[in-house]
Length: 466
Image (cartoon, rainbow, N blue to C red; front, side, top):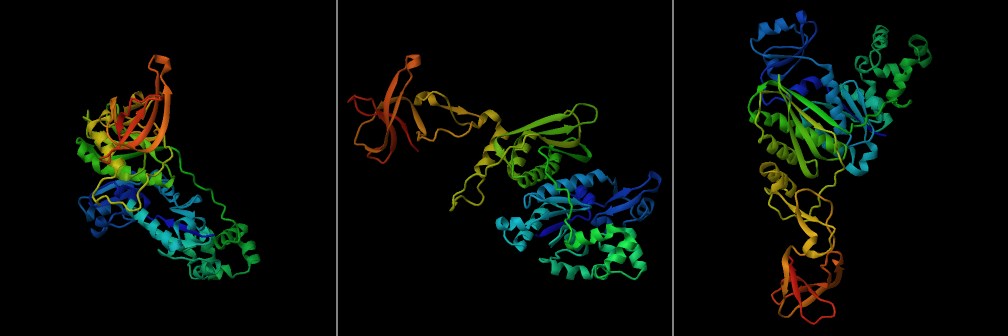
């Protein structure tokens, strides 16, 4: 087995920073109101001299203007679960550890390639989401967890290689129980290699079975005993805005971030979304709901953003917006659209799905049509315009341009396909008995024509193929 660990050292701060388009000084603070302590700082605040562990009053003495946001442990848990959902695309065995995510990747190598190839893809995904991380791999999840705590990029592909890397790990970074680590340090044991070579009987008498079990889970001699994570079937996310927003344009940045997160989440669970709601929360009045619907399930970040932005731009805000909430409680399966092997579209061309949803969002649901079917098999009654997806159309060939009524077709014709017998309409007095053919004219045009059975009145044209 091979486990990868994504260590997320600044999850709370990253969750705040990725919502903001600027890099103004910002810190997270925790503790009693009269003794706030800085627990995280962004780059610009660090350059100004602010440090983790400072009293808030000391930080204010160093820098006159910066934003201080209370640390929220629930945000850490929510972001960790979101990133676990993203990691789920690479493995069905994903588990949460303190400030980290572990996933079993050996069974996925037949799909994604070697660990080196998969590592590159995982890094690209997490960098695009705006979270800092350290990534390591080892035959055990706890071993990968320890290696990620040492440095980024460490890899052990075998148990022997893992033991060699663990030899030099300080006990302070071993993830073992703090009480045992302190006691071992007083005994002169400061590295994992020394601990792993000590007699087990003496360790058990002094520290009990708990330390030995943790060591065995680290090296793989015991099962990891992890609770696997399963992504939820619904999405309910909220972004608290830093100030009251009175202009729709100011919601574009958080909206792009939310739809990008939704696309990553859907990709992780191999699903799509066809309908969701954006809820604009105000101070003293009910929230404004903006429904976003698409003809088919989608999970492209660009398609979701274009559809949501088009609907949002049509809203007149009744009051300033304090928070933006995205709710999706129906996440159907997703089937990617087929692509030609040699796609000749220009690089700047919009995919059809994105263009279609952009038009619907800008012009309204009733402005874009597609062909729908009826239960009436007669050609003049079997096709109609529809504004929503109704499943696959009749697989039998039908002309793009169907005439309102058949007309005589003259000239030399070459039969390409047929006949297709239609004998129907008896229930409403419109009895129809026809044999349809696909024919080619002297000019190379393809037509849909019929000959009445047992009649010699010639061909009747009913439609043209594109």
